[in-house]
Length: 589
Image (cartoon, rainbow, N blue to C red; front, side, top):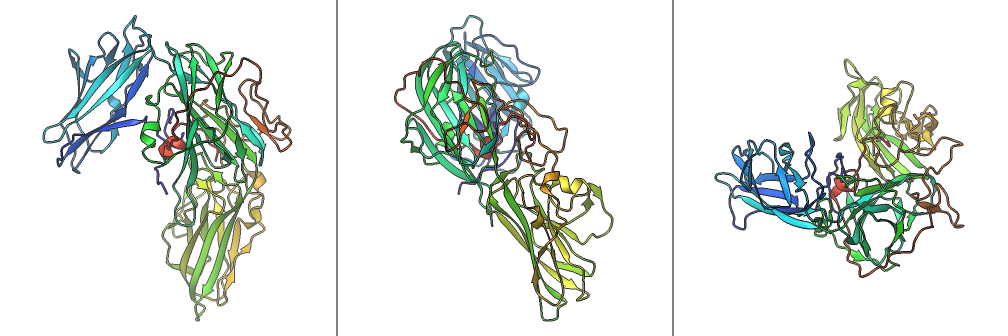
């Protein structure tokens, strides 16, 4: 199992989760030393051929630096950039740094990490007026410090070369399990030179599956997260290369990709990132090919069809190459709490076993950052005391957001996390002492943010759960052993705060109502499809008729010719995969 970190970041490769560094070049000296400095940066950077003043905040040359071999900070390092290779092509603005000829020197006053983004320098590359589009030069980067091995790296700067900008895909709602979704992302060459191919990196979460990958794609899968009692988030990665001439200002649509909506689909998505070169700044392929074993597809190859240009104008920023299709399926997941009591011979001491489980069929992904994630709450009656509390459980100190005074005899235990797969479960055992054999029952319930913060919810508010009766169980404590009895007062799933229709990918959503459900279906009676005809993917049922969304446009020109495929499947690290390429901070949980 490949274990990957999870982190949500702003910007493309914001995941997706995701975040995603561009395919990096880690440079260190060849000889051994106690303290080593490191540079981690993209192999290449793409900028427009039009001169651009640096923004107040932001950079287009990202350099990560670090040190290893010591736990002590380095306080006198220097980052030097030799821009001699950019003469006549581009200039480098570097606030906080000093420039002498072609050398730019940036002091690093405190370096205490193995890998950290040197974003405080705000390095900004801008083309020289009149430069020929498609030109390239090199920046040589050096990190040095006394008594440490220096590091060096070269970054190729492509000026005005081909650069793709993608159009947003509209989300699909109320899609039937067993149907087929055919994403058709559109993108245009916003660079100043023609492209000879399009390299499409694809990341898809569980709930969307491909039976046979196209022959001009390579694919792999990996799992991140997980642990005892539950699997990690299984994610598919692919990189597909379509060889075709795409002139500046020309728009195309990807064709031939078909995803099956599987039984574990509830809320899921597939991400697309499009590049003209395999080592583009935000491309993950070069680094990720080293981490996974890829297989080439055997199905019909993907193609590109010319379309009328409706892609947003302007040179792509760091998000521009990315688009995403969100899919909300008509499905449910039955979450259940459990509990049992096993006393010793005295009847005054015993083991209380509690747990939670997703009994499926859907797997649920809480993309909100934890608001919808389910935890386990164990409330002991007066007269019962925990002699030992299992790892992963802590005493409750707040109720409905307010601090409580004194002991509550109530505990919260970790749930499955943001990824709650079909079959995932967590179990805990409390060692209890009873001062009587005739006590009120212990209550074991599922909880999440809404049920904890809003009065009136005995158990978690889960829109995906059509059977809330087993979300709270009562366990009789005493001389007799026994299991949990479902409570009839569990919170009905229909009381969840509505999440509304998912916002189109790429727009920022900013809070408002409490979001605790992954459902993004429209309200009853509202049309399921809101996509524009030229951009909406198609979901089709067994009879071939579309479901959930509008038909994609089939008009326009013919398919561009294909040549040999050179592709690589991707694993972007959880940040890049799942959330790092997210350009919004809205909630689905």
